[in-house]
Image (cartoon, rainbow, N blue to C red; front, top):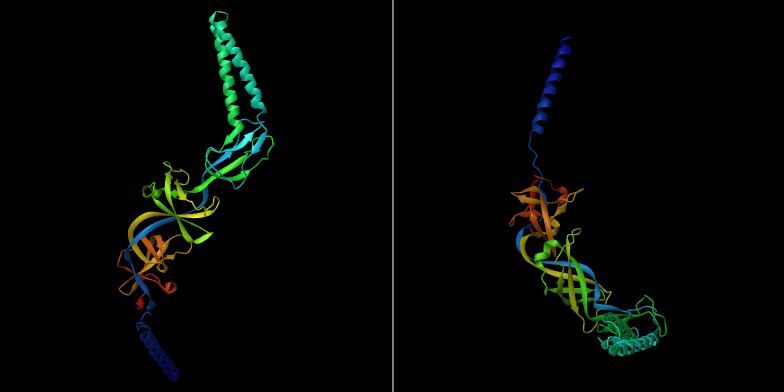
Length: 339
């Protein structure tokens, strides 16, 4: 019995010694491993604000060539697709049979009117009857003049014929006989965000690029600004005129128009420093202070090359991490590696 009690006491003494050894080991502080990172410094930089919009190149002017009256036969179309025409040039003549009949009617009415003048003067007919004859004569004159104008159709603009829908002798219906475009000047339309309304002025230069000439920049000028904004899209329309005397550009081409919206100063950092929070549109950075990473939300702005502007959340002179984001967290110790 005494021997058993001694063994129990010895075992308790050994357990107590073992417990004290564990506590001593466990209480020893373990140094946190610092995350090695690279950083960049937020700097105040001047930025050129440019906005690019995609558009379609349009003719400066275009016209459908049609007579005022339907049911007339086309006598002769004097131009074809691809032909160049000048303003005021006769390009279509219509059949004159109806015109000749109207001219005969006009001559009959004029003769009757002239014969009634002395009768009216002698009191043979009333003033009202004479006025009715005069009105009838004037109306017939307008009808004949209108038909004469439609018997020879002139081009209202200088340009090139881009469509021909009839042949000589066809009966004119509703479709235009010809389509003419002015292409020695062209235009492009763009819808610009309302925030830039104060920055856009008539006469401002705009750079235009097209895929067919990838290494060239064409210059245009703003010729018209819509004074009202679209309430749905919060944009306003702008029209740009492009000189095209060599006619290298053509209507229908896809174009990119780049507007210079001015210069501003902003806080800029390397774009790789800005991270997107998973599951949201929030952006964040890790600001490095006294060897510790600080998680901070920011509002980013425009990219310029490999830089991005920070509108809110960062001050010039602060350092932000540009590497090792998967190992960083708020309050994490870091070691900055020199570039």
